[in-house]
Every structure is written in C-alpha cells, then in structure tokens.
Image (cartoon, rainbow, N blue to C red; front, side):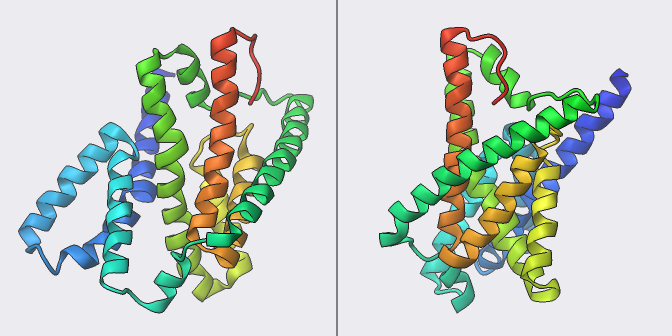
Length: 244
C-alpha cells in the first residue's frame, strides 16, 4: 500500500513538472536565449525544476510574470498581446459573471458528489483541505498565497494561454476546450471535485476567448478564494467536517 502511495506521489511530481513547470520555462526560454548561452540555460533549467518540486508553483509563477514582462517589452506577436490585454471597464461585469458561475458550479458539484455517494463511491476532499485545517497559521498564509494567487496565474497560463490556445489552432476551439479542461480536472487528483474543475476549465476557455487571459485568472482566483475562505471559517470556528 505504501509502495503504491510512493508511486502515486512520484506520478504527481512528474505531472507538476510537465504541466506546471515546463510550459512557463519553454515560453520564457525563447526570450532568455537572446541573453544567456546554452550552458547557463541548462543550469538555470535544472535549478528551476528542483526549486519547483520543492515549492510547487512559486517559481513557475515568477517565470510567468517574466514571460509577460518580456512579451510586452519586446512587443511579441499580435495574438499573444491580444490575449494578454487588460480587461479595463469589463472588470465588474466579469467579476459578477464569475460569482454567479461559482454558485452554479457549486450546486452542480453537490449533486455530482451526492450521486457518487449514492452509487457507493466514497468522496474525499482535496488534500489541500486537510492541510489547511491542520497547518499552523504561518503555513496557512503561505498556502493561501499559493492557492489563491500563484495557482490561478500559473495554471491559466499553462492550460488556457499555452495548451488551449495552441491546440485550438489544430483541433478547433470546442475540442481543445474539452480536452484541456479534462486534463485540468485530471491533474487535481480529486474525484469529488472533478465536475467543478472541468467546469472551470470550460468556462475559463470561454473567458479567455472573449476577454483574454486576465479574465480567466479572475475567475480562477474567485473560485479558489471562496473555497479557501470556507475552509478557513471551518478552521477558525471548529465547524464539523464540511465539504467545500
């Protein structure tokens, strides 16, 4: 059993490298190779991968920010700049849509989790749920930043800005949205929340197309913020086990 768990943890680490670390690196590399030689890039890459495995999305977040800095500074191609555009006057509209979406997807996922229980499949909250409840407050603050700030920026960069945008040119927007949303749900390794994660993926593809990358990040931020806020309320007031 423990051996199986070790293999599972290794598989999770591999998926973190493949889906979280590699896309920002490849995007930044095209800018860095103008300034750094191949040997230094190799050292940079190895150090970056190790740092990502130790800190999850902290270093990928830094690389994503650098990607946007170079893209804007160097006036990257029109398509990239178009999807990175500010949302400006649409901000309030997008936030209201995202709050409504959060409510709807929560209701849908409650029914989905109930259905799983009904057919005899035991549902379990994400590991992050237990970590938040049991961790000290210093770690909770760090996890809050990781979950609410870093994760939306990095994951939307990978799954919408890189994967969805790239695949949509080859297999069409609808199929690309379905495939990348399925992958997005899959790497969260949580059956009980699968419908929520898949729904976020689909809706964020829509937001990405209509309003750009920043709108997708806003929705992801709101979803994670509300989820973490509920967990913190449970922690603060010692509320008995509640699925969030």
